[in-house]
Amino acid sequence: MTDLHPLKAAGRAAAAETLAAAFDADPLFVWAIPDAARRARWLRAFMRSSLWLAWRDGRTWAAPPTNGERPGAVLSAVPPGRKTSRSRQVGFALRQLPQVLLGRPAPSRLRHLVRLGWRLEDHHPHAPHWHFFQLGVDPERQGQGLGRTIMEHAVALADADAVPAYLETSNPVNLPFYRHFGFDLVDTIALGGAPPVWTMLRPRGA
Image 1 (cartoon, helix red, strand yellow):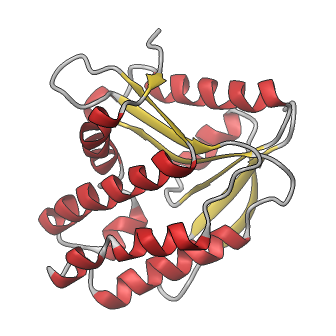
Image 2 (cartoon, rainbow, N blue to C red):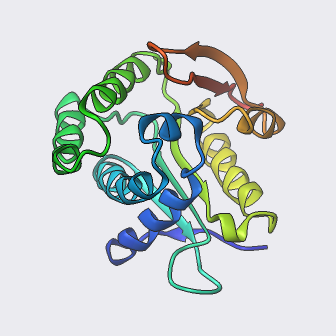
């Protein structure tokens, strides 16, 4: 079984490559940038910014690579009692401006993603909880149990602190997988014509 290890600063760029590959076929990101080549370039920049946010406000783990340099899987989370501030979120949005100037994604769709981020923030549970907001497996490593490794690590963190666990997903394929680990569907958030995002909660001790 592959273990996760804390991600070091030097590994963030490679971890962003893993997450970009993992989310390339996600319906929300396909909607945001239909062109595959542009989407791949934008996702690398988007995930680097996301990991910057995780690095400041939470914790990140990675599975070591077997071939190549990027991790096999990445998990980032915000522990109980901590929350990404609005100023951090604004900073995250500003880091996307160079991508907008390059036309990826279109400004209207980036605005949608930012609005979606605000909306999702408002849906977080009020009680202390672990928020797992980036979970990705390198497509070349799928089918090797890394998804299970990530989730077992995640729920163990929540159980150790005796608190609920919370996550969001914009890929319906993930719903039964997360349910297997005790997560229940809480809400469906859809803005405009974009694909929906589902919020899920694993009760304490589930």
